[in-house]
Length: 245
Image (cartoon, rainbow, N blue to C red):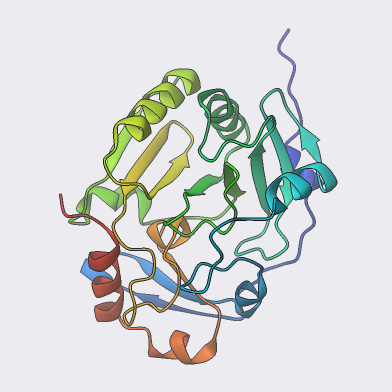
C-alpha cells in the first residue's frame, strides 16, 4: 500500500495575488512578465551596495520560530513578503549551510515531484537576502521555463525522473562551477543551474535579479521602475546578469 502525504503548502497562509499590476514583455521574443509587488522592497537584507558584511542569524531564527512542516532534511516556513501564492520557503533543517546540501535537494525535489509547483533558489550574490540554504517553493505557471534554452546564456539543464539522481547531479554541477553566485530553478523531473556575473544589473533593472526573474517574472517593488520596464531593458539586464553560452 502506498501512503499519500498531504501537500505541506496547504499549511501556508493564502495572501492572494501579491502583484498589484502586471505587464507582458517579450525580451528575446520570449514570454516574460513585469510584476509590481511593492511589499518586496520592505524586507530586511535587500541585496544592494549598503548590505552589511555579515548576517546576524535571521535564517536560523526564522527556521526555528516559523516552521509549519519538518521533513528529514528540510523545514517549511511562510514567506513574509511573497511574490506568488502559495509561497513558502524550504530551509535546510540542520546546521547553517550556506548552500544547498545534497540531502536537502533530494527531499526538496521529492516534495516537488509529489506535489508540483516550482522551486527557485538564489545564492548570495544572486539575489539571496539570507545566507542560510533555502529554496522558494511556489505554484504558478512559468511558460518561459520550457523555452529556457532559447536564451543566449549559460544554463545547465538536468533531466532525470529520479529526484535523488537529479539532486546529486545538481550538487556536482554547483560544486564545479567557477562563479560564486548562481541560481537554481526546478520543476517536477527537471532542474536548471545558471551561473551569474552580476547581481543588480542597473540601470536596466535596478534591483537584485534572482531566480524569479529567470523563471520569467521581473519583480518591481516600486511603480516608477515597473512603468519604465521594456523588453529592451530586460534584455540588457539579463545580458549583464548572466554568462553567455
